[in-house]
Image (cartoon, rainbow, N blue to C red; front, side):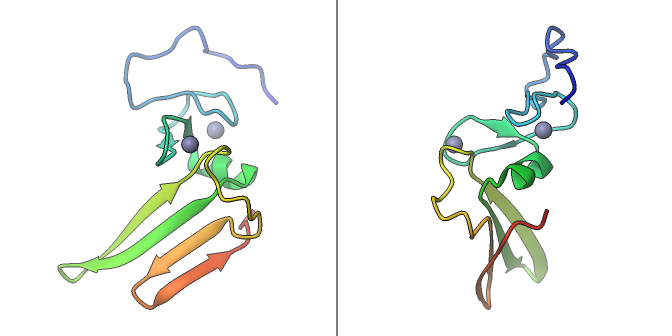
Length: 97
Ligand SMILES: [Zn+2]
Ligand SMILES: [Zn+2]
């Protein structure tokens, strides 16, 4: 784990949040859909946070929406880390890491 460099230089840009997993400010973070916890998508998948991909078609275009949950709001079932919702059904996958 690297030291938390730059923690005293928090940018005013509200889209750049400190990731609760790696404590770094690089890149933009995703937010838990139930609370204001921020983290990188890649960190969330490494940490086993629950993520849902909602794939749908809108006006003939493929739209994918990602919904994720923090450590507190994730489902207790650790086997279903990634849930994929498609028009054909719902699939679940173990962590891709
Ligand atoms: Zn991170
Ligand atoms: Zn949450």
